[in-house]
Image (cartoon, rainbow, N blue to C red; front, side):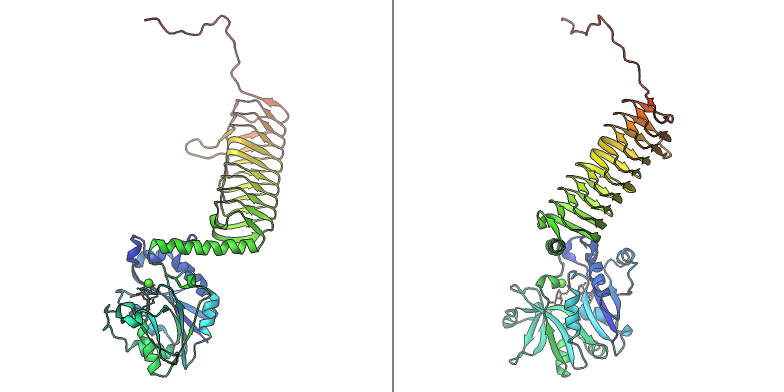
Length: 456
Ligand code: UD1
Ligand code: CA
């Protein structure tokens, strides 16, 4: 059976108080619409249509890579009107699945259960019981428990307002039936809108049974209408990811203070993550890794037994087995550290590789550099890789020792086992096995008097 998924995403989202269309706001760094799309993508035999409207150009540009049909609803005249825009693209034999672009946490399993309820004789409707049903359409049932209609809050009478079973808006229905009912929608209601929910009563009149199912948790069907709800769903999403990680063998010191804004390609065992760690993009983390508090790790590959101490920012980097990073280290894109490398506090590394066993422990900038193995780079060493116009490379041979407070003016090569005296400005290649230093000779002046303050 072919499924046509329609994602309704044309609404403005006034209560967000934002220039940005609501569905472009993000949870875990992914737009709300992308969340709904990614879930729908997992439904088999399915083509996705997105009804968009508010912020049309920005929405399409931001999400142009989605494999979906885009249909513009120029004026937002209601959920029924939104689905009417898609009518010509629905085949009679299709099952039409209706989702909302601002309901980001709906689960595939809930959709599967919903789809099992639709047939020629039944319409599938996702409902939920809410302690506070205010604002939602209420599910009206007859004395035998059969659903007879949905009544919107603004059209509900006092008795109907007491109903706690509400419409999530998510439903599945046969194409031919939906098209027939869409043709009959009227906007003679409190909001002057074409309500999709009116098709429920039409279905019942056509002896189509309304089969309801419920999500496993109400958070799955909560929509985002303001930034308070956005933050609530962000935390729900993050807690779920935290639980998943803990089930995989990761210790989280506090699951409420952990954020995964992306994916994990590979996840080892006995990883220990302290508080306020953010993992962004696509990361891979080996076995027995420990990550200290307040670290941000983006698109990086972290080997086994790596220790990352507090307050590190690591982006597009590869860290070899047994290496130790931080505290307060910054690894910028294209940093490649081999095994057992030590990077200490206030060290910045960019577009550089560091071979096995080398140490850069304090206050250094290493950019566009190839560092050999067993190299020791002293405190305050700077690679001067930029002349204001072009970037140049520095090469440091195996076993070299770079004294503290050295500037290596690129392009420059330091030979294997070379030693550079502290405080040197190195502008020429330094031969292997030799001591190279550039330093003003130290002098002492005997009998020199320190100036004293003049008497007034
Ligand atoms: C709708 C339902 C209500 C349900 C609630 C669940 C109707 C008439 N009411 O109410 O029963 O309890 O959702 O959240 O269906 N949209 C468009 N074009 C439009 C109008 C809306 O694309 O012209 C989209 C919105 O962007 C949103 C979704 O449809 O994603 C729901 O619209 P919204 O205005 O939030 O519906 P509610 O009035 O809350
Ligand atoms: Ca809504």
